[in-house]
Length: 321
Image 1 (tube, rainbow, N blue to C red):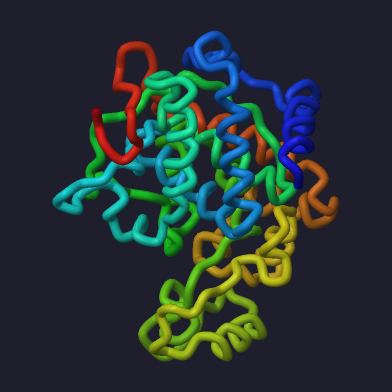
Image 2 (cartoon, helix red, strand yellow):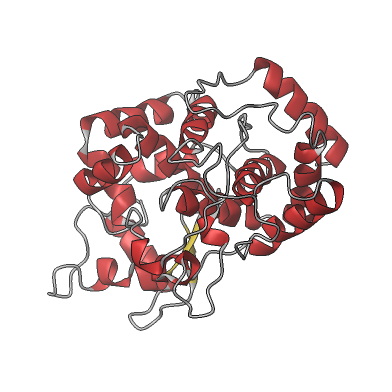
């Protein structure tokens, strides 16, 4: 999609799109005076990268999610540590990628408006614009977050792909998100990529008796076994087979057929509210998913943010000032 068309679409969607409740002092026009071209600069950079490598859309969306779930949406996942003990060094984050996109957008902003736009805001914008590049939903991103100065590997406690519904709901409730947000944001797995290493025990030795998870569709298990040998930990797997390059509601169809790749996908059928949402999206061909996703992403962007005099505006996203 051409950059010009993206800009026009963003303006239109901002007029007719998602409503924004703003209880924490962020502002859609936060940079209007000090860096009026901020969003356009970030969008231009994001389009350049993601249009060449569309899998970055999922990667950047995941990075934003991982950032917000540890110390809030403060860009702390971007920080590097000489002793390898920052958030990005934690096992769940070792496969996070796309840092170069955030760094490039920040560098472009520093040339135009030095010391103004936070890395936390850059990441929030990049995630939104990356999804838009692959024709996914748009959502407004209120701005004014400040960057955290602390990033600890030991604090990375993300929702686990092996978790059941009770643990997942607690993860989300602890961040001010609800059960609907959980199932809606799980829908991002429509463009997700994983690997055999995360599901081998689920299909080969679920209870230690050489069995597979009984919550899985047996035909899906057979298909996975053809792709993943017991000692294969690297082969990539689409989380929404046949639809991974398209941001749509097809993920819910897969889950409803008991073909969720992770336990955290399958367990969405174990809760009345999440199962009802899935059934509704399947029966209506995802009629409300884009709007719901946009609203949940706005909520995610408010999680434990730093504003006012808290934190800082980093000059380079990988290092505190």
